[in-house]
Length: 202
Image 1 (cartoon, rainbow, N blue to C red):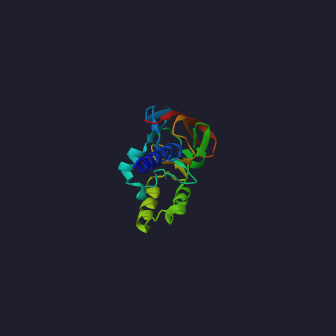
Image 2 (image 1 turned 90 degrees about the vertical axis):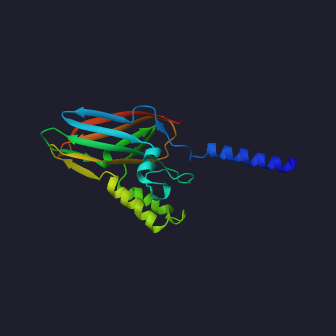
Image 3 (image 1 turned 45 degrees about the vertical axis):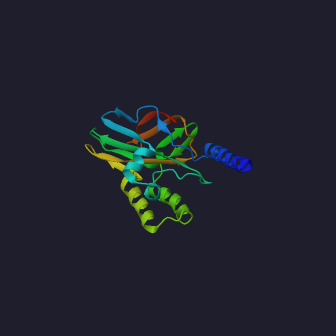
């Protein structure tokens, strides 16, 4: 009996250690304001960090939600999502390119990813995780609907909005900075918006 209890105790301890040491730990929460806004020459940029609770409420559970981190994968990538809105109240068109947007988080820098990159990541695990075709299509539809397009020219008076999605071996906590450059239509830079965040676990 004592040996049996001891074995159960060892299994529990091992499970706890494994959970703590594995990269698939709880998702980071923002200590700073989740909403941030800045303006330059009548160009307004608003960003909102979306934690996994909000993303799950809005887009559903793991099997159909492309914005939740896949836990316990060998090629682990933590997914960080911001909702972004850019409003051009200036008198000139301005240009936005997804590939120029960066998130630096505890020394790791990643560029915002496009639809193809995000879906190719989930394609790898579709068979391994026994994901049904309809669930995969749900993910694909959400990516197409919400993720920012590759580039946009924003005319005076226009607004664009969508998700900025970053996927890298980010830690659970640390300082981060989201950088969004805005260009002239001839690709001359107008300004670079910078939004600081601090992430932690609660």
